[in-house]
Image (cartoon, rainbow, N blue to C red; front, side, top):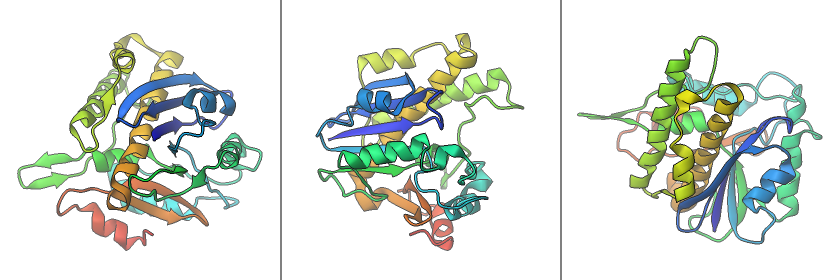
Length: 272
């Protein structure tokens, strides 16, 4: 088995982040300099017959002509208090239309025998892919531990946006890197190859503009790959699926800590 994460740009003019974890749980390669669907599939070896689970950070099922998908309304109901709600996806965006690069990637994967499966079989040999969303997954997987239990916090603000200072973005990226490295102590444990450790040891304060954006894409691709590994390792026990395969869904990790405040909220919005 191998586990692939794709932080896919909505246009092939822009680079995407791709990462690959092998069957031992080692992050063996990652890149944020891939543009065409063929290039990212080649880098990840998705044409190879090897059993693979692919986690893609992009809306994969979009049927609504305007506004937002039902799953995005559900995610807003749960994660808006954590500042981790999604952007709306609809067919006015060319990326989500039949000729768009995301739909074309889905067709490629299906032509190679992959099935779109929001839930994967626990530690079973399979070729599948699903939609993921890193921001709420961060909220779930990186809780704040307190004396009385735990709470969930906002996702890291490592993306350049208006109102965020460059120093704040740098510090948040450093925290994201530390969170990823902390996955070495989690179950399943993520191991880092020497090459990946070197790539993640960069001084982010020296990067700006496009050079920083590629690092942003790289780290998101790595996190998506870990999500694929996590869902395979835990199966149903570690998986929440918000939405459905008719109108759109997002696969999220399940918080495994006792008394989690997110559990009743997810049940309330009708998670399937």
